[in-house]
Image (cartoon, rainbow, N blue to C red; front, top):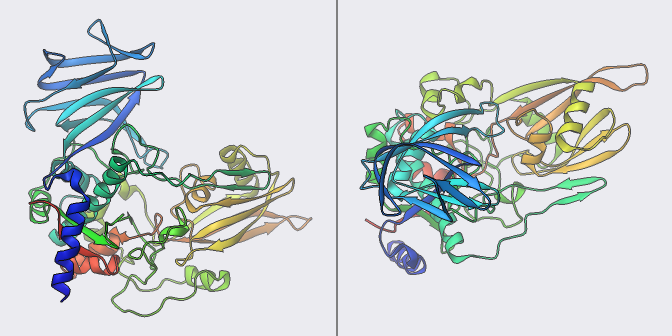
Length: 457
């Protein structure tokens, strides 16, 4: 009976996703933008009936693209196949994160230049499966276990197709909240701002760095063995979120983004036990839990496992299962004022108002000597309390050293996890792979009730 239901749902999904035409689609990826785009065609490309190769420069000029002395509304550099490649200079990776840097990156497929406002976007167009080879290699080390790579291939494909389907159908988007009142600032960030292409190339969507990093044969094997496979639930391809380290408990979708819970993105302990999790929405319970170091899949310091998930710049991050950040009162006050463009005066307290099921703070009350502000959601909190991003919003606050007026001179944030914690925990999944779990078992752990189906072969 279950097999018949799954087959019926699979056919319904295929029928619904007609724009795939039962075959592998192309994906458009926004790589870099600017008033000037410098790039290198590493093979012969055809553009506007001409053959081009070598060093190239395109400039924004009064609403058009200047290339080779002519003005264009857009340009498509068409390759003769996936053996051709182009290199883009000054591509920023890790935007606004502590590992932010610029690289020259190389990509297979076609290059399209389009106008967006007063700048040019460089967009890579290529088949989904080829895109995934880079995503898996960019999101984690290519020498990860095959089962982890297969699991990540399925969720990266699912996440992408969910985004492509939404954009293709031009669904009415949930308005991005921007509550910017005198004493409240609440907003969240998602991928809905991409109108000109399917996804971007940075952590905002999925980390994609083309063929800059060599694809390990094991990655190609993982992509091939899961070709066309996606997760489905509730009659839809799953919006399969993932983060680096959940910190021991997975978060639920609605505490990080819009108030639309997903049946397959639920709070649960990152362990083999189906035990109930403590009520981490309660501040006292969350504080005890965050100050503890519970056993879980992602509680590991094994370098051979962490190196599977963390690329070279990711490994600059340490102590992420449980972490500490210290600020002097004036340092924190200046940081918050600069990041939020609001003068609260000297910060005297940070009070969690609302927590999610993983203990991550959804609403934080920041108390200053001049005024107070309620801030949310989790990513906005992480941005406001760090030069880049706090590892997560699952933290408790210790006030340190008080002056003669009883005001704290310092703050220590003690936190859990790295990222929003929704969906697959990459480090936890790496541990599961090393412990012998199959990729479908890993997926069933992190996406409760979801099923694997194949949309194309």
